[in-house]
Image (spheres, helix red, strand yellow):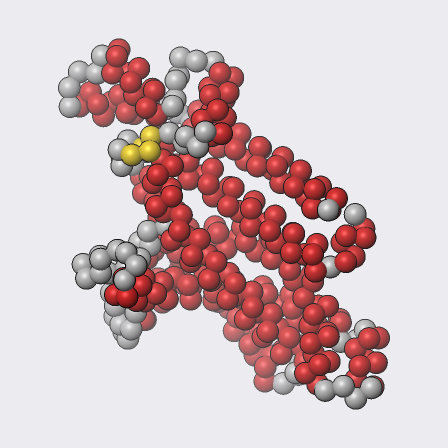
Length: 330
């Protein structure tokens, strides 16, 4: 429990630093959201003093207050779940993010879990059969990891996407068929969502699986020389049992590396969503940046930060739960 508490304190400190940086960024760049909104409002008519005050209240960005007062108001709004108002969508930022977030979490969860499980299994196989043809899986996986996410996504679209030039097997735009599927819990919509998620998920998996393969392979090679594995082989235990004993111990460092991989995958998935016009956080972040919608950009940064920290904390909790040595050290 003390190990988890110490980790929780570290993540709370990291969250405070990240959220403070998110507060400062829009205020240190040239211009501000209020000036941009006033300029847009002035194009459709005169924006008097009352209009400016209304815009400041709506955006939660009072430039006439001191920076400290703005910071206090920023935290008050965060604690009440108020992330501001989006002028481009004319809706509360929190409501917009709640509509974007499930798409990103579903894609991220499926792709990262698949990459971790498949990479660990392949790494175990490569280590056990080292020196065989299975070793070719490592350079192949490393080749895909060396490619930028957006480049790999574009190549998959050109080869397999319906908007591409070759096989045209899978949908390559949007999160579902916007012309033929009615959103809701119905079979056509679910089938459309699954079909549209194949190429984005495959992109993330191919670009991230090599790290898990290499980590598991290296740990397995080290573990296979440990005494408990040699004793298990000497006792004549079945091969599958010996592999399971070795893999279970080799998996512990891989789980700890999983926390580092999460942030890298999230950064790459943002680019993947942009390429596929996938309606998640990443695509709408790019759209909000293009529209200079500061409130929406800041809200998305806050949510991405909290999601990554929560995922890392969950991975740390799993590591502490499965490794008694971590609890004893604490």
